Length: 323
Image (cartoon, rainbow, N blue to C red; front, side, top):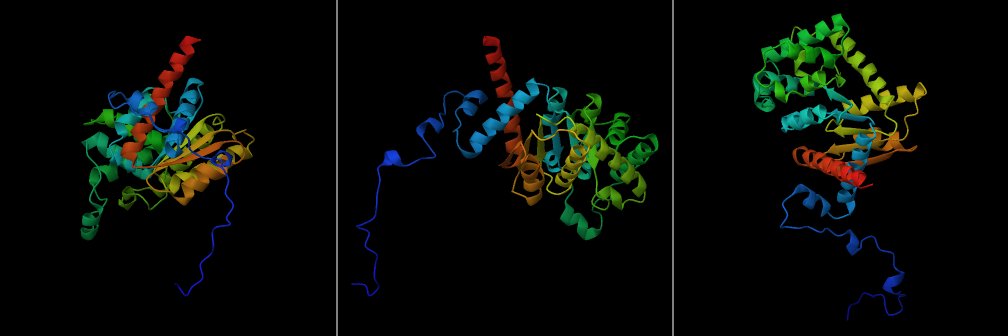
């Protein structure tokens, strides 16, 4: 016998299963058809539970917004380019699926190098040791020249770099998101913090031009948000700059009386960060919108999501044709 007393459980109260609410039933289970290798079969067979339920809901709502001609505002960090997703976004721009695209400064740098050389992303640790990190001539000189010209001509940062690329001999213009925005008349806004980009290390850098062009892009971005009601905003992989820009821009448009309350905000990232969660997903949607966070590797999650969106587009088109 133990010297420590144990509680007697013989008098506990129990109740039948039928009286207990449950969160999962077999109707929510996945139905995978392993003999059908189409995406639609795989997608339709996902469980209607947790992240899979959210992804289906977001994809369905995105397809509805596209069909209604609503705004889809995309904010993206540089990591998407470094994980090989440029062709996907070029195609989305070509199809008219993106209304406005906002980048941080690093995104433009990597896009510029991809278009010009077909390669990007240096070994930061190795080059930091030798003091060579970020000192590629063509990138530093070229983007700074574009920004200075943009400031002189009244262009925003995004338009200035796009026009610069459009006038250059490029190895891979088809892989440039920046060029695709220019060619398809999609506003591209670039939001920089001085001292955070490698091109700011170069003697050609003009702080006034950086501020002028990026501030113009902020105002262009604000204008784009005036039409966000019943639309959606997606954040892809910028944990600091773009969530802060979005919060301030949204405040501006609400301050000016625009009814931007009812929209969907989705954060796609590899980990859960405070600023995207609070400044994009949570705070802005408290008075009528809906917010979601989907966590996963960009190179897997984002292509999967957009494939799901166009599966919903086809489904909704077929349903409309049956009426």
